[in-house]
Image 1 (cartoon, rainbow, N blue to C red):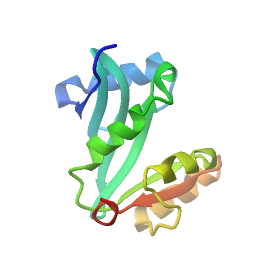
Image 2 (cartoon, helix red, strand yellow):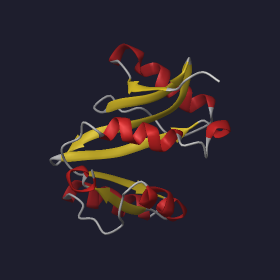
Image 3 (cartoon, rainbow, N blue to C red):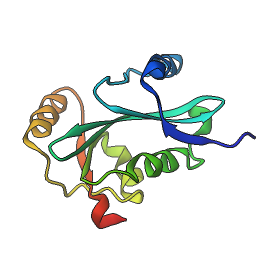
Image 4 (cartoon, rainbow, N blue to C red):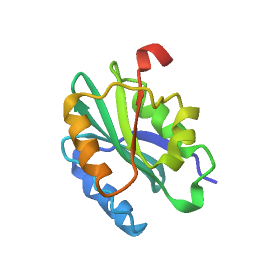
Length: 140
């Protein structure tokens, strides 16, 4: 098995992230105003977006190829992407993913910036979502 490389995705290669999501029938999309991070074994096997917001980052689009789930890829990708972060990180997830994110240091007891509070309220109209947060300066 080839080693996995975890690194930011350069802007000219951003279309590859959306291709990865589409290949796996995910509705996620890469955000052009975010830092895109990927895990690669020659091809992209996982990705995430970190969008600067309110002195921190909003984590979206974390997705691991189904055949590689449960092997620590998501955790390693998050560790690589969040290591340079100097502020809090927030995310929204389905309630069944809360335990996964808690094992990575996220907490459901988080203060969201106003813009994310509004967005979460809109999302919750259509599906069950919870907010979680991580303060790397406290967790690391």
